[in-house]
Length: 179
Image (cartoon, rainbow, N blue to C red; front, side):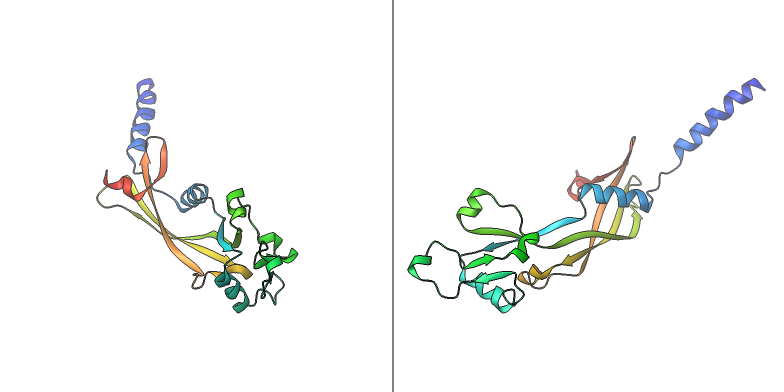
């Protein structure tokens, strides 16, 4: 009986260690969110002295919405002032800029956020049982400044590659698969 009690745990341990480790969607979701820092900010550089950027803002009615003021006529005394001025209403969308960017009159603006939505499919690799492909959807929430980047998708399908090692699942770059 004592030998049976010693053998059973060893057999159970061997059986559990030989089982294929499957990646579940909850673990994959947590790891994807952590690795790619979701939700993340999508930014756009506005060249405040560029007449093309000023015209785009006028065309998209950002001045009418009260987000910017556009200097339509520039006099000699205004030569150091930018064509585009951001208003108080746009302050929540303005991102930090470096001193060099400020010197060139560049302002980074948040045009939206990129958020993890859901996992579509988890597919183990048929050639390598330690690798699993996870396909998932990210959603883009665009704000009023999002019109500056035309054709921005509402959502996009992305892929993440996972590998199983001794200490669990890890996300790897696709280029690492071929090494």
